[in-house]
Length: 109
Length: 115
Image (cartoon, rainbow over the protein chains, first blue to last red):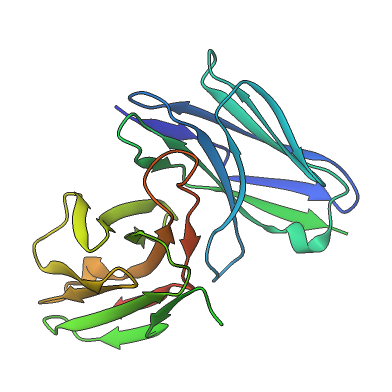
């Protein structure tokens, strides 16, 4: 079956760095997406990886290893506004997105 | 201007009623979607339309019927509402269905509560 695993909840301190891991098993692979979702709001696009390696975008970076079925989202210089859920989604061979349940990130001062 | 707008934002209704949620996008996207996000926060695709044509129709009860009058609109009608239909329904759109084109822009969500 198709499956996305990511931790349910993580806690980090303002100003620190946090890494949110995601492992995926999908029928085929056409890319890995990360979205941010603040409580009560819509998910918003953060990053897309289709090749192995690290993609950096400001304070956020995303990494992909296709051979390991693994990705992570790295958030640096954490700010209180980064408190949100982070959704990992893998695109399968039919170009359908398979979503994880999200990782709720709690930032403490 | 809101890119993807859906109405209503909140909907409280009784079991057995029929209700509709409307969605409009002004991004010029070709593909629109309906997702259901339940209490466990999983996003599940329900339907997808590309240029008004149905391309994804996941296993949802046939009480749910999407309608796309044009490529900027995708409405969701739900008949005979049940308690298990309570969830947040998100409308989304994207340029197309290929990989690089498939960044989704979501609406703000419609929280449906069935009593």
